[in-house]
Image 1 (tube, rainbow, N blue to C red):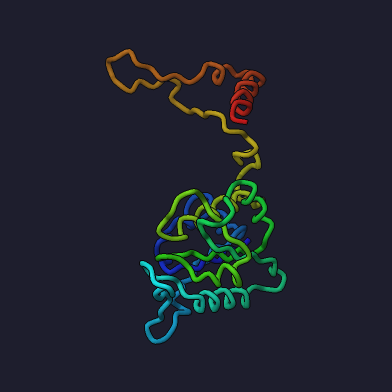
Image 2 (cartoon, rainbow, N blue to C red; image 1 turned 90 degrees about the vertical axis):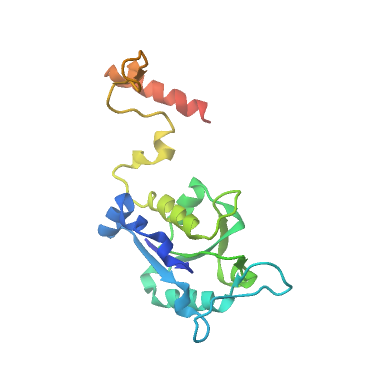
Length: 221
């Protein structure tokens, strides 16, 4: 699967996509993450990508022309066998992103993710360029870069082979508490304060452990 991210601040992503699970997935060729600097398609000598809003108001708005050119450029380079593509604009007005949305998006071969910035994005991007708008929560961020990272991470987990086991998905294993060594932890030396691992997890009785975990799955429904 291929993720194409269009951003006015591509440096904001750092090394996130090259580490841990996503890094290994890229090394195995299971996913590809490419970040594009929107200014490559900027207007004029100064590669301008934003302008003042019509009708007045604070801040600057990302222009439609650079985004149109960026999306068209990316689509023109997508191979025919990878033509299944979805273009997404991050917006507070978009549909709420959750696991079911991540699973749906994992069926595409290519996702083009448009990151907003400044005061907003020219509405013509949502109306004529993006296939849909997505929101990652009921709050406002400085740009679409963090939402893009969330979508790449969440969608990638549904790509076969990205996780070691299918059961590693939170949706399958349930949201039960997990523990590891030490069995007993004392946060304050010399004081009788102990944080213990539940005895059932140390019992070796897999049936009881399974029942214990399922009790949390039920309570979270």
